[in-house]
Amino acid sequence: MQVNIMVVGLKQNLTKAKDCLKKTRILGVIGMGGIGKTTLATVIFHELKSTYDASYFAKDLKNKSDSLGILCDVLTDFNKDLKSLPTNLVDAQNMLKQFMVGKKVLIILDDIRDQDQLDDLFRPDILSDNTGITLIITTRHWDKIKDRVRENGKVEVGTLDENAANELFILHSCGSGGLLPTAFCDIGGRIVKACNGLPLSLAILGAFLRDKWRLRCWERALRRIKRGRCLDGDQEYEDRKLWSTLRTSFDGLGTDEKNMFLDIACFFCKDVWPNGMSVGRALHVWTMNDIPPIESFNMLIERSLVNVDRNGHIEMHDQLRDMGRMIVEKEEEYLGTRVWSIDLSSSTQSIKEV
Image (cartoon, rainbow, N blue to C red; front, side):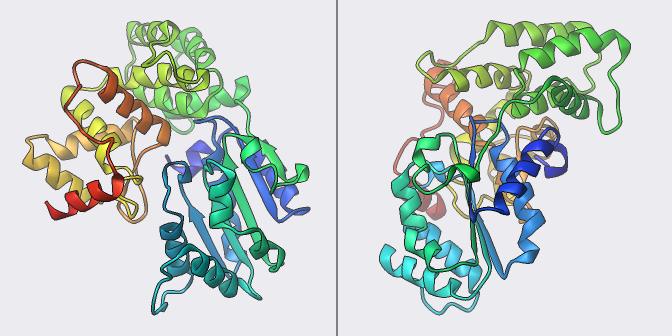
């Protein structure tokens, strides 16, 4: 999703984050999935990186266990002329520390899952010995980073207020500068309320309803949201609340678009392809399997279900990915159609060999 669209409603948090960075070099951005943590960190990164000698954004770390591989990516990005990469974690940490001496460096660690991962990626002495480093960490759980982030560096991202929620929904359903037709104001307000102030839900529901200017379509979407169709009763409440909204957009896809969405969720996300799956390569795979690729893929983009980064690689929000994988695991229609829950290193190698 584009930063200039998703930044709606984050202005207050952006101001707070910048104020915190005047007082501390370590910022912790806390909040539930789909609330806008990554978006906030992305906006900060793009606004500040030009003021640093080097910068790196490590995305979606919740689903990455190879700390050495991540550090090698960081080192390669910082030093394009690096002759050889470290073969163990300690050497990688020491090389990172050495590189940062005397430099202003900005690093963002997105969606940290536990303190051990944080310590592996950014050893405490690296920060203490280099005063020019700014570290921003996003996570769902404060207790995972509280030993490294002071209270004055804590930014909690909450749900959007009513005005911001309406603004974001209308932006996606009507376009920039658009307004809801009078006949849709009431139902639109109820849909916004049902999204519980979650930016991801508002963006995707707005995109789903764009150009569907029939009241019964909007009423049907609202009923689906209120039914709270969930994929698994054992999931955390916050995920189920979000998925019940996102599922409405998935259900509104055609067969080809649903299969393409599930392929991306299971096979083409960056936790399987760390360097990213290119759009061209994915389209080639789908063409070989008789899926009309261009039209279907563009539909997913239009509905904000996938994005393409500046390098031409496919991106999908981790909540959408998790929802897609849960559909494949739990629903009879899709059981056995995609085997993805295997060792990622071996699966990636197998795919590369095909």
